[in-house]
Amino acid sequence: MTAPARYCMRCGSRLTRDSRASMCAPCRQLSGIGSDHAPEFGADFWYTDQMRDACASRDMGALVRAYRYHPAHGHKPLPQEIVSRWLDITQSQLSRIESGRNRVDTLDKLIHYARALKMPTDLLWFELPEEKQNPRKRSGDVFALPDGPVVAATSGHTESALADSLLGTLDQYYSMDNLAGPKSLVSIAPQQLKFVEDLLSKARDKDRKQLLYVGARYAEFAGWVYQDTGALNSAMQMSSMALDFAQEMGDDTLTSYILMRRSNIATDAKRPELALKLVDAALSKATDLPPRYRAVALRQRAHAFAQLDQLDDCARTLELAFACAARSADSENDLAQYCTPEYVEMEAAHCWIELGQAEKAIGTLQHSLERWKPEYRRDLGLCLARLAVAHASSGQIENAIIVADRSLEIARDTKSFRIEDQLSRLPPILMAQGAEDKARRFDRSIRSLKS
Image: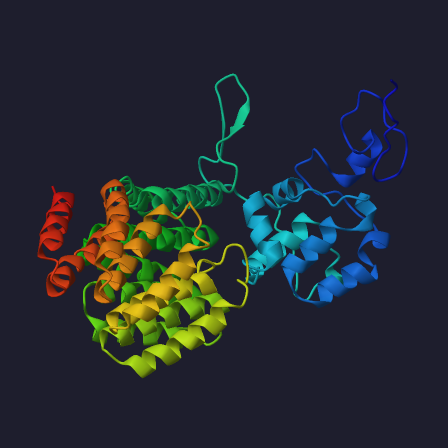
């Protein structure tokens, strides 16, 4: 059977049968595909309504996206991997710039992007200085081998590529933590953080800002891992380091998130007054917090009120948290995107247990478990532990033991201090309900977790 004819996506001319490209050779040359530099486009490219509107937005991310999607490129946009090469950045960086997550707002970056894409000066909202001839390269960037070629030692964005790679690795750590708990990460996360600190000691300008973000993320994660192993002092130290990184880079949203995390550690340490001060600082730090960030901070504020036995304040705060969580996350990179209404519902149940409203907690937790995702196994153990405590508090002893045994299995596998801490509340409640034998048996099971 004869293969169907294929045509150049830019000019429509027929492609050869053995060609795997989507453009003919002349169009590939015109578009700059395969080159390390952007091609020259004429007035018919730049002086269209599409490009004028993008320039008028004064948003380099919007302008680069309009550049990639220009009809001159054919029916498909220019791939990000090509344009990112022209801009001397990574594809991940370009994606964040186009989505608005990383805004290009410093003059040196604006000038670099304008020159790299050969933008007409009269369309720009900033001045382009005259280019200096023969710019000097850093010592060691380029060198000649004896009787051999000239070699480029760096690509120009090594630190940026490392930052993106480290963030990708961190995403894998989060997935591992959700499944298996902190036991496999308690030594890895601090080591990776030390590596980031070493990179930071040599980084400057934009590379330093990117690595500060990576450092804040790794330090916050290390704090979380320590918290879930019960090393709360180390957790506070790590989150303090994360806060320093976030404040140095001037990211109010990230600063707010880390203050919320410090508040969460304080509630685990049974210090509700400190927790309330920290979470109030988190809520006031950024005047325009994205909805999920505000939701997770409000959820934490409700925890502090529950520990302080302030029922009305806790209930009002949870209502606000539900309302914020119901709004969608601003982007897929939103750190608080996990704070869905279902998540707030499960966290609310913990507040009801603290406030002695076991029946209300049981219904809430059972509703959450109906929609549980298997990749969050460690948090399943925590949810079951809370449900066991709620059952025992309401006098449902057999149900409490059945659920607690399931939670205990996950606690053994994950070594999660939070699950263990919640289960340790069960024996005294069972004793108070007259189930002394069951209380002693379960107390021995909990003690075995520490061995």
